[in-house]
Image (tube, rainbow, N blue to C red; front, top):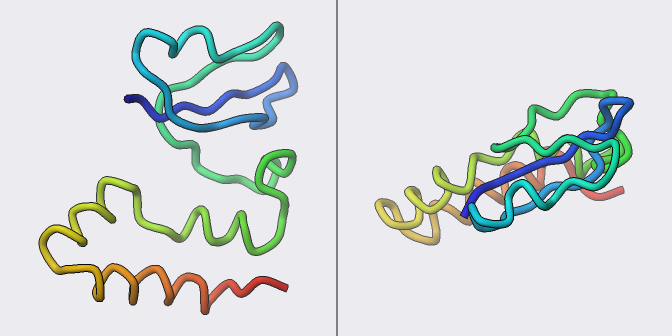
Length: 93
């Protein structure tokens, strides 16, 4: 599986997710470009993330790989505490 994100012709992130290597290039539509990985969230990326707590949380959460590593090596309680700290720092409004 690959993480991907898609930017439109203006450079805005319009979609992101995971897909198989076989379908990676098929994710983009006309005038869009598919990129491998997870984007750095910037203030200009508001169509997907918005400007509120979701964008702040997204950039503050560890990568999925890091989260899984924490669960495996340190357990669910440590992982939950890390995630809760981000949620507490950037609460839903």
